[in-house]
Length: 75
Image 1: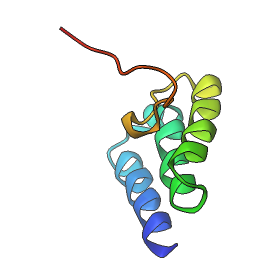
Image 2: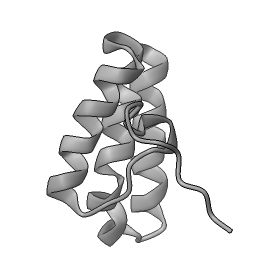
Image 3: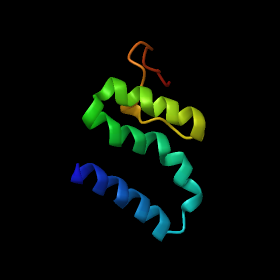
Image 4: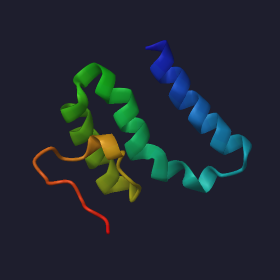
């Protein structure tokens, strides 16, 4: 628990100390996944992160992709 909270705190503190507070809402899905996956598992954490992404307009952590959806292939 301490590691998870410390990692999220460090990420937020770093952005704030650099004056990059406008980026904070975009971090919501990734930080939500980081906070929930260790306790709920990767699939449930991904569902929660995708729900947060829908409301935040940010990016979902690559490890939180929908397992039912085939991986995206970039050329």
